[in-house]
Image (tube, rainbow, N blue to C red; front, side, top):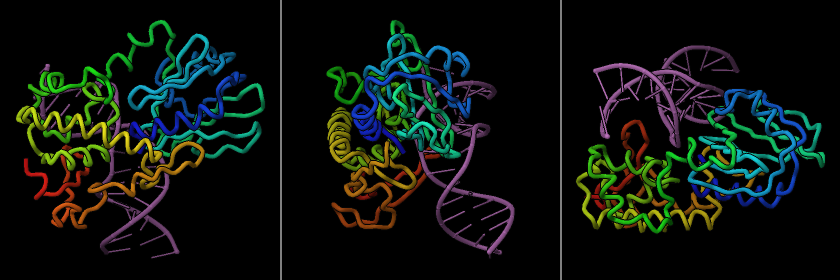
Length: 274
DNA sequence: GTGACCACCTGGCCGC
DNA sequence: TGCGGCCAGGTGGTCA
């Protein structure tokens, strides 16, 4: 499932393929993907726009057009493919951007969880969804004081809160397990009971894990691959996630899998005892 | 403001 | 082999 490193990989892959292309037509085959505005308005406004740049904010892909930003969240299984005009549609391709050069960018999503917004450039930072996002992992303002302020009222387990995109963006279920393992923090720990040392470890290990994952092209796990069939390699580096019943790489204890607020969570009871 | 729960979705897996 | 049920999970909405 796409988390920050996977979105970063998609962004870089697409930048090398579609920058400068002008949108001639758009087909929305499943309107539920278009969150804002209506799909009719979406189509009307985006035709004639050129893709000038592609950025990322948290798990959102940001296609910079002439007058708008097209925001795209891949959720669980969203991906982009380049096709030639006239290629037969796959049943899971839901939005198709036709370019003036005869190629097409198609959004494919087997579970239809992904969402798109088309937002005017001058209000992009003050509009949903970007105005509700927290700090990037590499933001200078992400420090112990920031986390302490955000976490002080949170009684939920840290495993749940570390996924909160309004605090730190980009962390999903896979990397959350890895970050807590490296930080030696039990995922059940009440967030407001974490010590400053724990918060510092979360910050450092978030950067470490995500940087390493980006270098390796993200994680290819279960049904997810990146754009254009690009496979990430970080799953080879996962220490606990998806390793239920295997030995902890640090202490040789058995890695267990539990459910915390509905999320599958892998951890080592011996190492993560804080 | 916070936390619990549910809905959105469909492919894969498991048990019968 | 076929069927039904469960699971996976990011996010937003509703309700207490």
